[in-house]
Amino acid sequence: MNKGTVLAEQTHTPAQGPNTTDRIVERIRNGDVRTVSRLIRNIEDKNPRATELIKSLFPLTGRAHVIGLTGAPGAGKSTLSDALITNYRKQGKTVGVLAVDPTSPFTGGAILGDRVRMQKHAEDKGVFIRSLATRGALGGLSDAVDEAIHVLDAMGKDIILVETVGTGQSEVDIMNNAHSILLVLTPGMGDEVQTIKAGVMEIADLFVINKADQPGAAKLLNELTRALDMADGFRSGWRPPILTVENLAQSEPFLAKVDQVRSKIDEHYELLRDSDVLKERERRKAGVQLKHALDSGLVDKVVESLHESGKWEEMLTALAGKQSDPYSLTEDIVSLVCAEDWRQRLNAMPITADRREKT
Image (tube, rainbow, N blue to C red; front, side, top):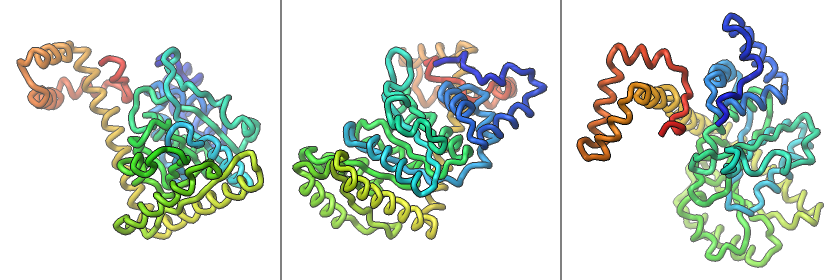
């Protein structure tokens, strides 16, 4: 983590704070790429200043269509993202991309960077692409994804593509961040549906069989179809379609299939907007956001304060020595934070202290 990373504007005096915040927000609204990049970097670094900016940006969000792409490594998520960017740009829509990558053990950043993916869009001002490192987060995403989506939304992007890291069927956190979720599959996975049905398959709004010209594609299509036939209804009234995309080298057929995928994504979003499902998903997302904020604003601060007072080490010693248990210690902590001196201590601490660094 780079605690020294700060926005250039932070070097101004505190008296300039509110105006500085307004200027940064205005730059983001105007699509200033450098400002957006710095803010997302500060979000990843859990810089308290980033939290203050998110507060100002939050009322400007809620307009973008967030599309999640998940699936196993090598399924072709980035290829599909790249093609969808091109397609949406032809529709006149601006696109933001958040690609979650494994964390480098040396730099702490994303192993795959922005420069090596989707390079042909680098000069397009209507496209913003950012890689995020998982930094130990589970569920296929980064802890910074939620707030980074807010930033791109406030930036004015019509479409935001979120590509998960691609580690397996536990990648279900995307359901709390995206309106429409694509599960990208490839033939030749063995017992295809059996390998995915217990996890990520249930969250898919669309199935995309990539490399459908390869052996095994028909089997995968049939297994998926049978699995959907056996489903106990579809609460939203939307049966996830199964779409196939063939070889990228065959440009025209490939682009025609991508156009079908884009059309189905748009159709799904229209259904969400025309029903109560979108409101239900937004409410679920709001619950996740609030819990995340509580972690940063309360739990992290409590742990930070316990470290500063030395009580954290005392409690760990008691726990490891079996003189106490986690539940009794939690009760002690709750009693402790209700004390007046601790409330004052916590109120004086900024939000987004990095708990993981200290544990």
